[in-house]
Image (cartoon, rainbow, N blue to C red):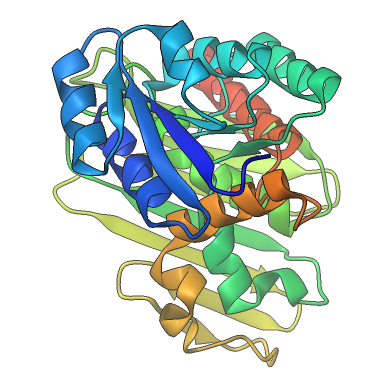
Length: 308
């Protein structure tokens, strides 16, 4: 692998811009290229602002890079990831990994077959790590997550479940050793033509209950989570970066000041690059872990359809 990794980003939208800046700012990496077959001018604008080049030719783009981030709309993630893997490039895929389990399995299998690093952008795990939640020596009893945002033109190719709720689904799966057993959900279809508001309850086989409330038609942003343990409760406000802890466990009240919590995306991309270089055994979130979150998200979507 090259000493300075040439980063390439598929997608010239908002997330493409975020990831392009990451490659431009990460030690040992640089932004080499941005690819978008439909918005070449935008790809050139983003790339050139960081010393790279814009492309609308996929083959030429892949030849210009060492590692690839897929930051296109979610419904196109599998296409970009599989093309990059076929070209021998380690891949970081923004969440969701794909929009079907079949595509997720294809991505994971291709990465494994070629022995390439595959990471997914569930970067909120970095914040949980900064708080110390993964070191709590008890299994949680209950989790309640709220993730609301106002209407936006972004990510309308997928439901609110794959757009917003999937973050909290992944966090619940990371916290509990149990397996999802039953899912119930209700929701509202509004401006996107799909599910724009959803509430789901997931029962796990170890008794853990997780409740998720996601909306992209709310009047204001809200990001909160409550985790109940046998020893007490933790209530987190992700917007104010504060929490209330009655568990007695030494969670970090100053987590917001840690490098990871200040820039979770940066920490997630750095973890990907470290895994590519062989400096870390794995990225922050693996393809297999992302597929578990996708599997649960699709179960929530099925429950929404069943509930009518």
